[in-house]
Image (cartoon, rainbow, N blue to C red; front, side, top):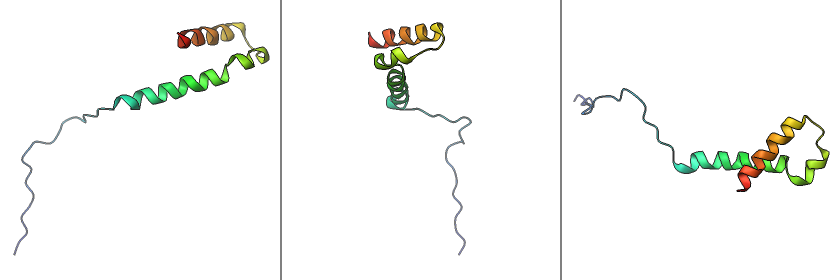
Length: 67
């Protein structure tokens, strides 16, 4: 007795449709922000001896995230 072949009733998809849940985008962004705040926290500000432009940029990012 021969086995019946599976016949597709719908055409194959021409593109991949991937939908991410909201947390798949929010959690990495939140983790990045938390790590950035830990690295550039106010407790370590006195130890920074780098470029003042970088320090100013980090300060602006902290102000933006704190609002």
